[in-house]
Length: 191
Ligand SMILES: Cc1cc2nc3c(=O)[nH]c(=O)nc-3n(C[C@H](O)[C@H](O)[C@H](O)COP(=O)(O)O)c2cc1C
Image (spheres, rainbow, N blue to C red):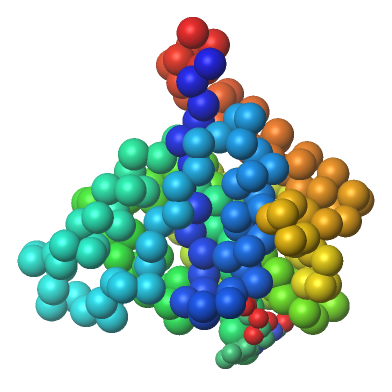
């Protein structure tokens, strides 16, 4: 059975990113429904409207990887109670140039983690507002994850059973949402 193509965007450029570990664990958890691929954002140039008419190879690659996805998973930390700059930069490139918005109509599931008690809730809330403005179709619900040492175990699985089931629910609902939005996709998956 063909699987849904899932673009994974991690809102961190940190080598040991806990959000990248969570993203990889989510990709593993949903491997029966999604073929996931990580979309790199750390090599994108700083957004500058002067360069919209002459996109760098990195930006062209980024936008085409978004566009070929059936859905996008964004796993983000919180920086100063908001969206990390590296992720906002990628969001802006995805949205531009005018008329070439790579996010439009794209189903997206936003989650993320932080050691703080509310996970990366405020960053996720800010990001939701931005993505809605760009026409992204967001999965409902709130997936705020507090980072604990066993969040992702040595095998790359979600370590805690309750958290695993909680996130599995989002993965299933996300796959169902994509399939409902695109009947042709449903037919392809069923074929
Ligand atoms: C500039 C900066 C701002 C931060 N602001 C917050 C914050 O507002 N809320 C929070 O929970 N953690 C905050 N943190 C801590 C991050 O949650 C922590 O560094 C986490 O590991 C970042 O995720 P990453 O490992 O995926 O990059 C901040 C970290 C940095 C470097």
